[in-house]
Amino acid sequence: MITIIEANTKALLKEYVTFPFSLYKDHPYWVPPLIQDELEGFDKTKNPAFENAEATFYLAYQNNKIVGRIAAIINWDEVNHQQKKKVRFGWWDVIDDLEVTRALLEKVKELGQKNNLEYIEGPMGFSNLDKVGVVTEGFNEIGSMITWYNHPYYKEHLEQLGYVKEKEYLENKFPFANVKPEYFEKIVPLIKKRYQLRELNFTKTKDIMPHVDKMFDLFNKSYASLSSFVAITDVQKEYFKKKYISFINPEYIKFVMDKDDEMVAFSIVMPSFSRALQKAKGKLFPFGFYHLLKAKKESKEVLFYLIGVAPEYQSKGVTAIIFEEYYNTFTEKGILECIRTPELEDNIAIHQLWKHFDPVTFRRRRTYRKEI
Image (cartoon, rainbow, N blue to C red; front, side, top):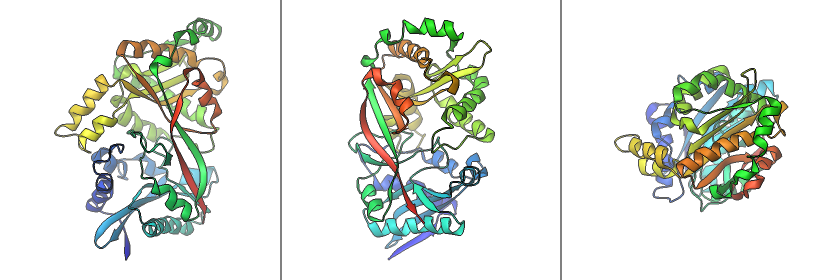
């Protein structure tokens, strides 16, 4: 018999967060999150996503043992402002038992019906800066701190229950050796002169902070046309500023400014923390912090986390300025591999940015949909 209960206490939420640690114990490709970080993300008093969203967290039990988990989420900005009558599901993990998945998704359906919503989509988080998608190809590649990993049967469970593909995401990578400076070194001076642009680099995190609000404004502006996009609010900007910016090497954040000191392009790259997080086993102390700090300083792999260009500057070669700056930084640091985080398959503009570097798609993931 399968029993579903709401994880509505600190103790149950801890069980919710730590369940994947047993499901993926010693798995070579699963990257564990930091337990405390996950718990804070589910805390309504700390995560501003709850100002415009609601979530209920469920645990599935069988023979008094946890066998699955799921979050049922409504992003009310999406429902009310975009008229997308959708209930989301995320943070979904389960043993290979179709009936457990069925029981968990039934709870998501119930939340949707209760609020007169029309369809379910997932896995996805509260916003566009959360993790997204179930892995459908590329199971023998290590995950990252900003993606979910899953067993191959997740896809089979969803399809057997009548869920169909909604959005496809690609993850690509290329060796840094593929980046040839001749791709951009001749055109960068011309672009800077024509549009009166300049690059902005950093060596200290405190110098980045005055620009971060402008960066998130540009993020909202440059991604607004994507079908899945929900804008980041002012309160969320402050949250992400504290949560992420101080975690990233300042030299890995690049801005392009115009003559009026307005931001027209930005990019955020992160060192790969995958192996460090595996060693940390979900905890910063006693040794997790050491592993993460070591990776921050020494990792030879980098993840392109976000890149955005103002709509009026797209297709004008502005990203060449960013690539040149990263080329100089990566050469100095001895970077060997560049990894791109999940990008929508139909986001042709973003894929065109990388075509000269011969990227290889190493993993695919997707969200699934079902009418209620």
